[in-house]
Image (cartoon, rainbow, N blue to C red; front, top):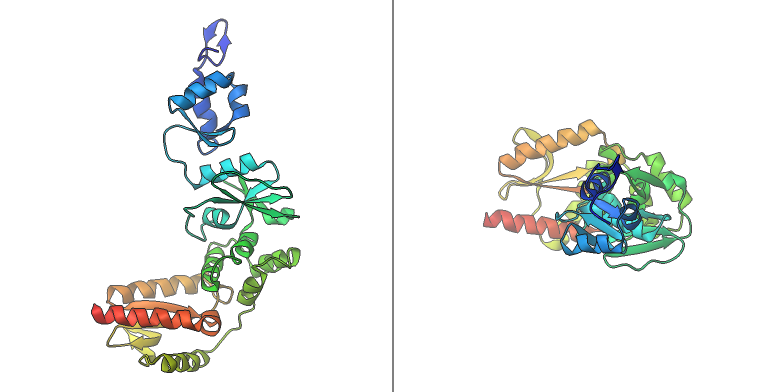
Length: 308
């Protein structure tokens, strides 16, 4: 077919490439084979546009329009489309789309309701069921809900990274504790369940309890003891190594905090950083379940501070 999409009274209406661009623009630059044929293109016309670089194959019968590199949205949409109607973006891809984790650089995660799928650049997860409450549409792409996404990534990440993602989800008002509990009830055997349960059940702790545990850990690691409940740049901080100018703050979990407290803490961190302090934060979960990771962070900070 000629590169004319339609005619009205024998007069060309619109060049087909402009129609392709218009369709792809609504889909993050992505267009599928069926849409191309609906615009009047045959196999030859599609392959011609691939050869000249106007279309680029992302997946089987799924193309990217234009010469730009595909972003996360384009790659996720392409992955969902090629995996079929029962597929949704999930895990690291969904977490990045919700803004609670950095964008992944590897394969795109997709969860499929039953069946299997093997495609280059896609990590497929098969599940027997996915409740409607666990699915959302974000930027026109079906993805797992924020709470389900947290449950999924909890199987692959250290608990402190899951805690950080959960905090971001709460700060962005994407989830409530009730949302997370409901998701756990719907999928009680998911591998990430124990980590998520421990985070939402994290007890409120006193600074004195945290101090005692930290002192014990520092003594065992032969690291210097900080000053507790001390002042740095007019702020009272939980712990400070004055010579090295390193501050450690004990955070309650996100579900025990408020947005105002979060913003206030970050403003204080910014002031301390400008004054030359290195600010570390820890949680009761890290203190009790990953103490070696915390001590390693503190030791590294003290060494870097001395070198500085």
